[in-house]
Amino acid sequence: MNQAAQELTPNKFVQTLTIIYMALLSGLLLFIGFVFFQFEGGMTPTFDSSDTLLLIYPVVAIGAILLSQVIYKKLLTTAKNKSGLKSKLQGYQTASIVKFALIEGPAFFGIVLTMVTGNTAFIAIAGVLVIFLLLQKPSQAKVENDLDLRGDDRNKFNRYDEVID
Image 1 (cartoon, rainbow, N blue to C red):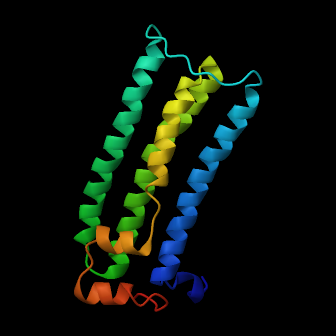
Image 2 (cartoon, helix red, strand yellow; image 1 turned 90 degrees about the horizontal axis):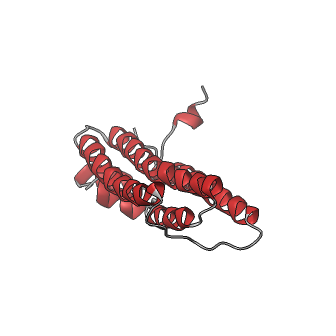
C-alpha cells in the first residue's frame, strides 16, 4: 500500500470524518427531496391518534437520539483510555460513525414510512432527526474537546499537517 495513504494527520482525520458525515447527511437529504417530489398534491401531516405507527415512531426517534448518545459516550470512553493519539482518533472515528448511523437509520425509516403510508407526519419527525444530525458535524475543536486531549496528545493534534505516529 502507498505510504502516503497510510499517513494520518489531524487535518486528514477531520476531513475524512467530515466526508463520511456529509455522505450520510447528503443521502438523507436527497431521499427527503425525492419523497417531497413524489407528493404532487402537497404535503400535509396527519396526526391521527389511532395510527399505531404514528404513536410508535416518535418513541423510536427519541430512543435513537438517546441511544446514539449513550453508545457514543461509551465508545468515546474506550477511545480516551487507549494509548497513543492514533489509537484514540481511530476509536473516536468509530464512535462518531456509530452515532451518525444510529441517527440516520431511524430517519430513513421515517422517510420510508411517509412513502408507504402517505402520511407526512413521519417525515416531519424524521426532520427532527436530520436537524439533530446536523448538530453533530465533526470539527477539530469537537474532536479535541470530546477526546479530552491533554499534554503530548494535544500538542500532536494541534500540529495540523504533521503525521501522527
